[in-house]
Amino acid sequence: MRIILLGPPGSGKGTQAQRLVQRYRIIQLSTGEMLRAAVAAGSPVGLRAKDIMAGGGLVPDDIVVGVIADRIEQPDARNGFILDGFPRTVPQAEALDDLLKHKHMKLDAVVELRVNESALLQRVETRVAEMRARGEEVRVDDTPEVLTKRLATYRSLTEPLIHYYSERRKLLTVDGMMTIEQVTREIGRILAAIGAVDSTPAKKPAPVKRGGTGTAGKAVRRGSRSSAVGSRSAKKAAKAVRKVGKRPAKRSKKAARKVGRKVAKKGARRVTKRRAKA
Ligand code: ADP
Image (tube, rainbow, N blue to C red; front, side):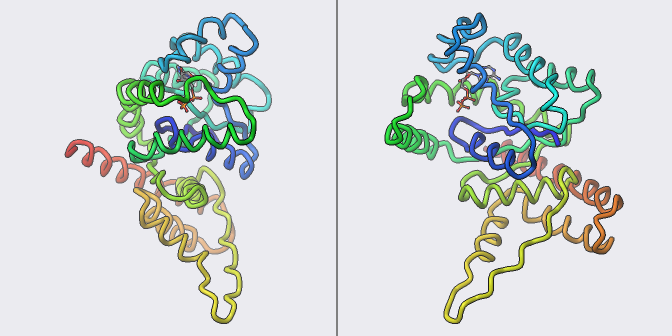
């Protein structure tokens, strides 16, 4: 599976990427982390990136494309990867398309984490406070001033990718304002709907204790209702899987993929409409 996580700083890309890594045994490629490592190592790439990153700007496309091109060549990327923080500009997305085409690799989906901008500053402040409490070094670009700049950079240079990938029917939008757990579940569901991952059978709900409330099921339903694409895709995917019976045969995957693409398209259309209204 090869996917891209798209969303502004603080939208939860890193957190969700790590959860996907655990669940699907694929690697996370975070250009932010790679660049921070290069800065720490004082490599030529790091020297070029250092001040740009500290100011909240974007490192030139040729540098990050080079970094990613080298990385996806590695054997551990063969099973798939999650791109976190890349691509961040349309030219980067075009370069990635070329790169994947050249290597006969297919991109399964672009998962956009949609969040309210007003919540982002608070989230980053919380992240900084938690890192301080753990005695970890805080990122130099995690200040309110630089975050404002990073958000502006996201809006002008990265947000156009939403249109780019929705036109290519790759975009799946998830409500990133839900809890971490709900977002993870929703991502899993939509990836199953497009056939990118096998849909794991739902866990049997824990027996409800007398007088208990059994909140797990409720959390799932709440989450799916508030997501932009997930609820419908989940139902349709479930239907597609049910149609072909219990065996996870090829047909079920194919059917799910067909349904998923349709849903992705509808979702993308809905998003575009909403954007046009705004
Ligand atoms: P964020 O939480 O802001 O998404 P990241 O860790 O992904 O942070 O990135 C930190 C910084 O690294 C960015 O502000 C930018 O300067 C640089 N960077 C990361 N990825 C890219 C990229 N694909 N293109 C250009 N610059 C990048």
